[in-house]
Length: 497
Ligand code: AMP
Ligand code: MG
Image (tube, rainbow, N blue to C red; front, top):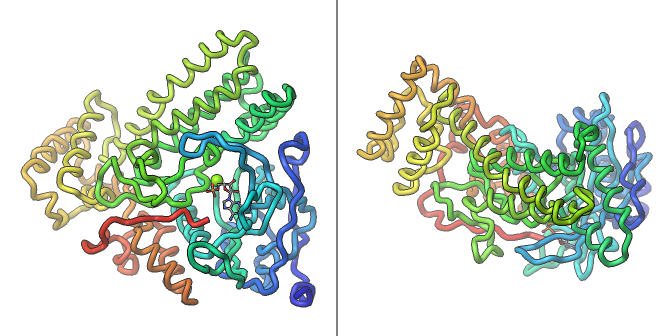
């Protein structure tokens, strides 16, 4: 087994690793060791991302990449750890931690930006509980596709650098092929990391660890708040602002995260851990894809509310830092939490104006947008195609556009554009740069994952080519611009752990 590993001498030098997380108190992490994989095989590698990370891998052979990104050969300077955290899962508090993910180091790029390099599915850690620490190929490829699609849509997200097949079985409801995903993130500090620190403070009276974590996170992500009079309140507000921007962007493209537990909310403002995620087809705020979300807690229309709920859990952890007097701290925190709705609405409306081709603000724009959404819901119009077709030069042959109630709305929309002194052609130009033609349609993602499972990666490559250039309309991406086939029925995603 080991001979396969040692026969290859991968290019593991030339990286610029730092391990700042390990300077935190020991309670925040545990040393970890990726499981040795006898026969790792590179499935996909994100060369442009590697280049952006200044990684010296352009000439590296697939077998060497497989050795590195399976965890068999760690880069020089790596210090592999699993991070401790807690979280509210579907509303219930639990102690968690990286049960199947290993942080190998922080790649520091030219200019000083720092990126966590994490191997997901690399084996058991101190936090695996009863889990096997492994991941299946399908869900890791799904994360790869969705993260790269979100990034191309201009949405802050963790990225995917590689997927390596382990050629080992993973035992779930069925036996699945195993894989390791290399995830790249601004950091993996979560709301749940603060909940963990707060829980320890309560249990073990270690008041200093919370402030240490807060100061570390501020230095890493929000150095601008350092000079603030109440820097921890300003820290909270900055995190809330980033979340308001992020969730507004999700809503504007119809993205449903699927499992917005507090451990899946990154303080950096990146989308993270979108396991059972999917994009909405027909507009309906009640849309839920995840098979484990029976109550619709994480439905499309609930995402802003859930973000606010998660931020409340975050604010609670910060109370002792916000003010010495608890009542005063609560008052300040509540006020800051209360501002989330307005922050979200601001970003949503700003984005919605662009989706409607509007360059200026008018009081009634929110209403105009909500009316269109209401009509889309009534007629079950496809969210992505409708906005794209509104921005098309020629009228799309879509039955929704022939409905009398839509036509009445459209007349008001045209009048609204005219009031800006804009022509419809100018407005539509803005719309085509704002409304994607291509999103990772559920049936296309499934098709790619099925083919990849059978050893054919060409379907996945074609899908990636389409979703990473979402605003283009070419003959090659025509099949990716279509809505879900009528026979598709209700789509279900599975947690895929
Ligand atoms: P996730 O659904 O990926 O956000 O994971 C939720 C929690 O379950 C995290 O603490 C994971 O580390 C843990 N977990 C998920 N799958 C596994 C697994 N196969 N083995 C060990 N821990 C896991
Ligand atoms: Mg998670």
